[in-house]
Image 1 (cartoon, rainbow, N blue to C red):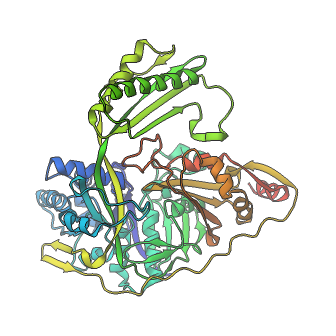
Image 2: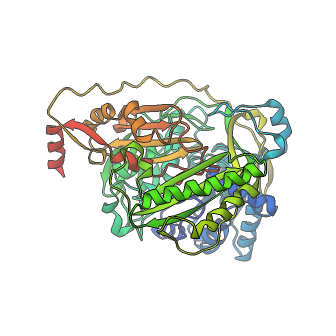
Length: 598
């Protein structure tokens, strides 16, 4: 196949390493570099920043660290830049970047895409009274709403590039749109090119978390451990049919393999046959991953099912206050001492609240880290001799949260022996911005592109209505054979993440022959044993035959989600690690064959 569009992914979150941009520029031969800075937690942080300062609310690092030192080389190479660093305030981000471009005497054109911010429509939205798309709950009071942002798509990005923009800045868009927009512009895809749009979206999904596709957070971390310091950032070469190849800069650290790319493909995708984006509804169930050379993987087979008529919209609202602290105990009976300390602190706090005729805490979380509290019923029976007890809570009144922090510190001399800890500042109550997600019809969102040529009102072109994907045939039950049990990690890779209050765990077989055994072992009942202490909702399983993998959804598993949860792991980043320790029955002869191949 002829050379495609080469796109480098330089950022997966606000705070990603500063080495990415110069590394990708040094690699050369790129048409675009894209940056994804936004997550639900990030948007909540940026909303608070903008509330304090009308010139804030964007990812400042994009301007000062990613762009300023590299603008001259970007201009010299003619590499074009796309980023959602605008966050809650894309106009302010564009103003700061244009100032830097002018300061350096460059001729780079900056375009900014707006329209995702719907806060000005708060009262009208309140009258419409949408329900949360995941929980079915009612809209919070309008006076408590802090931000409302629709997740825009890729076609406005392409339109800005069509107007000769060198750098395109957006507010909230879906993470993959920064990549898909470049591909739409380059190949001229339209709303009817569904499979190509799905493939370009998947390329964006692989790039959107930076080095998670090149060995970061990889199950087989020891394979890349000695080269994580110099890990390479991913490059996708996208072709006209939507297929693409993933690689990294030559000589850089990390690894590109079926496992590294497959883990990222499964990361946070929900139902793989209904991955809904503004520009296309995607079916990834038949996607195949092929290692075509050292550190090179070809990805193909994504299907488009139509074009959704709505934008996912995330609203944040003031839902009281939270705080917490970690206290360490060590020595004999450390676990029992830590639990007793936590219980005592809460009893004292609740007694005070009762005297003051104040309500109880709305949520409390106690986790004994080091005593395998994350493993639930599957924890070890060995007593822990070193424990960090994390106590966190929420309350409508900041003073009640402050009471906990005062009482916990005040019990330092009236606790079981073994309390210790590195001295530091006492934490303060922090406001909770809870998340509420719903759908907004596209015709209710006014998207604009602003550049040196002026302001362009943009409207989506109609596309085919989204249809349901064909049913996938799940693996047949394994035939009786000589059985052995091994940890799942011997048979599969896994990675986990979050969408609101839903945990996603993707599992990919190391060899396709293992997949029927994995599917048969990871039943909903078995998954309940692993995650039941976290999850109070439905457990769903989805099979992806193309990649010999499965995706697992745990509803109501994150204590409300990252913006408001009290959990030690509010984004389910370690849930996959819990699953990899679970024993799975497998055919002994198959296992021997696989081990003989190593």
